[in-house]
Structure formats: C-alpha cells, structure tokens
Length: 568
Image 1 (cartoon, one colour):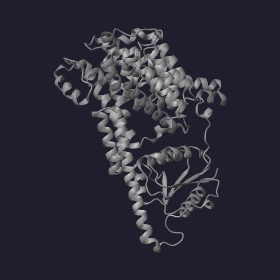
Image 2: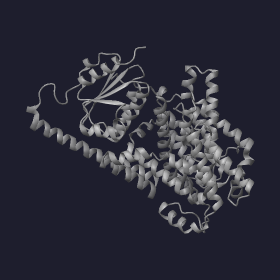
Image 3: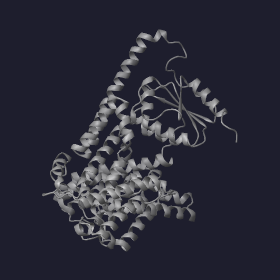
Image 4: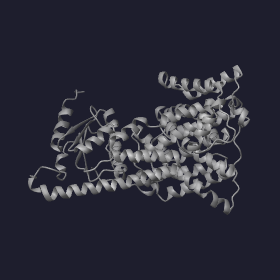
C-alpha cells in the first residue's frame, strides 16, 4: 500500500468547518444543511430534556447543553457531521455527582472536565482512544443501555418510592420491586403509547420525527383527559424561555480537589463517547475525522456549557447518525441544529410544562434499546472465548460497578488475552520452523509479498503482516480509507497474518460493507481457518467477499470478476 502521509500540526487542528468552507460552500449546501439541522433539532428537543431529567437536573439544563455545547462542537470540531449535546452515557455519573456534591459541584466538575479535554487534545492524546478493543466498546455500550433503561423504570410505571431512588443497579432493582404496588396505570398507558408511536413511525415512516410526535401525542392526551401523571410543570415548574447569563460556579482550591475525580471521569467518558460517535459518522460517510481537533472542541464546549449552567456535553451517536441520514454536507448543519433548538425554547417553552415524565422516560427507553448493539453482542459471544470473556466482563462491571471501571477492566483483559494469543502463535511458528521446514517447498507456506502482483490499476492489493489486533486496527482503517473509490477490486492478502481479533475483523467488515455498496469486488487470500472464522462471525461473508487459497488465485478471481461486469 502507499506510504502513509503524516499530517502536520496545522492539519490535525484545523476545524472541519474551515475545511468545508475552503472547498466551496454554496447556497444549495446551506439549504441542505438547514433541513438536516432542523431534523436533528426535532430529535434533540425531547431527548435533551429527557436526559437532563434522568440525570437528576432540571430539563432546561439539557437544552442549554445542546444549544451552547452543540453549536461549539460543530463550529470547532474535527468531524463534519458530529452533533453535540447531553448523552445518555453520562446519566449515572451526572446523577451521582449531583447527589453527592449538588448542582454547583456538578457545574465545577463539567468546567474542569472541559479543561482536561482541551489539554488532552492539544497534547495530541486523542490518538490513544483508537486502541480501545471492539468487544470493550460493544460491552460498554450495552452496559450503558441497561443502566439507562433501569433508570427510567420509575417514571415509565409512575412508581412512588418512599425514599430517594438508589443509583446502583444492585440496590435499585429491589427498591423498584417493592414499589410495584404503586404503579400508575395512566403513566404506563402514556409510556406505552409513546413507545408504540416511536417504533411504528420509525418502521413505517422513518423520515417523520417519531420522538417528537410520540411526546407531543402523549402530552396532548394527558392534558385533554386530565390524567393524574407527573409532568415537567408539576415536578420542575416548567422551563425558562431565555438563556441564562454566563457565570462561573463557586471555585475554591478544596472544591477543585474534591471535584477532580468526577471531572476526570467526565473527561474520559466524554472523549471515548465523542470519538466513537465520530467513528460512526466516518463509517457512514467514508470521511475521516481529526480526533485531537475534536477533543479540543469538546473541551471548549464543556467549559462554555458549564458557564451557562449546562451539564456534560459530548458527541452523540444517535443524533450524529440522524444528521448524516438527513443529508448534512458539513458542520453548518450542527450549528443550525443548535440555533433551531434555541428558537424552540424561546417560542415554545410554556408548552414544555405539559410533557409527561412517562413520555420522556419512554423516549430514553427506546434510545436504550436502539443503542445496545444486539447483533454485535451476539456475534462476539460466538466469536471466541477470549472475546466473550472481554465482552461479558466489560458489560457486567459497567452495570454493577461503574462505567470507567468497565472500560479499564475490558481493556486490561483484552491486552492480557492478546499477549497470550501472540505467545501461542510464536510458539506454534517456532515448532513449525524447527520440525516441518524440510516439508516446505519454495512458493508454499507464508512467503513474502511480491509487489509485482499489483500491476493492474483496477485492483488494489492490501498486504497485512503480523498480528492484526486492536492496537493496529485504527492504522489499517485509516489506510483503507485512502484507497478511495477507483479500484474495481480489493484483495486482502492474509498469508502473513497469524492472529486476527474481533476489532480487526470489525475493521475489515466496515470496509467491506462500504466497498460492496459501491460495487467493488472483495477477495480475501490465504486466510487460515481461525482468521476466516473470526471474519465470518463478524459478518464478512458471501456474497460480499470471496475467499481464495493464495494471492495468485485471488488476482485471477479479481480479473475474472471485473471481466464479467456488464459493459457501460
């Protein structure tokens, strides 16, 4: 493959907004981005309030976060399509911080986390986030989904708890079970109505704003029928119709030291969540984000959010994906989404008082269901015992301990298991060399790559050598992104790959899906049985790919496939 271009400091920290404007941004692009921004704002409006309520703060703080933080992330970020705002992943951390330290402590922690994220990006440490293994991200995301859903059971059922709701799942479930006799039938009906509308609209009319329609219908029904359910108005007294003036929270040395652990947790989780969201946008569009520039934007956004009384802001996967599907051309869509949210708050703030909390809980319940990567979770359980162990350890520790411990546990297990697999591979290769070398003839076995094979401009040959695991997956993904759309066939030569883990297999799967959509032929050569199994479990199967015994056979198959294409 071609020599990797090393980006300069200026390239690494140039905002995507500047890049898009340099490329030429026309009136047609503004119209397209305005439509995408409005679409995302309609999704973000109920979601931002729901996340704030679930986090133990007032719904207006969720809107402040989406407006201020969302605008800055799009304006300064390193992703064309990233949408910033409050995220469900922070619900548990924010709620625990509010309970232990109050609102002022939370705001200070958000401010400090912004400073940490800013420093992380400027020191170019965002690159290291790419080393998080695939089973860790899937287990972590599924764990967050369970936590979010559990946090909404009280409002979904309209339960009345004698004391405060416990934060830890192991204590929360018994408390909710004891409160089941207090179920509110009206709240259950509104929650069910909201979920059915969201799911039905997503299935039959995917372009319609299902979240907003579901919440609006539930609010209208509750108001017209006078149902005895809690609303934003009865619990919080409504939301303001203007943004507050920016101000610093109370800052003392002792308070900074006290809030530093929470700030570090916010920063770590925010960096992971935002860069995962940027990677999702990359996989959907074929673009490449600038991770360190993105972290700088996240840092500035969190600092600004704290000044306006907002909570943690980060890149949000669901809203970013919605932005891409709505046809966004660049960061202007995200900036307009924030302005649309501001307009909604200024004009429709009184109406928010009628929104039932059961409807907002239903919104988060559907978000939790959708964010859990169920097919990937099941595939990793089948992939290998090592992947299953990492996945379940991350999942369970995330649920029963906390998010940060879940990530650290999964990463450490992945590293240890990878070292074990590499040691086994070295031992096998040594035995093979000592005992069976006499049986190997020239041209057989794992020989070195021959550049002479790559003589056809329509065929790209990707030769990968050595253990292909989570530590190398991001570099390979970046190289694959530079292939572009010219080749009619891409061949992966795995003759020199003794180990391929699930993160590497997911990287290949993502590229294969994009290449298959544009009509390119993908052929995998010389992969042994274990490598082929890892690929197939993660979805790299026919008809998207073909497998060949060696590189020579793969090249011949590529020529045949190209020759069989209908002539234009």
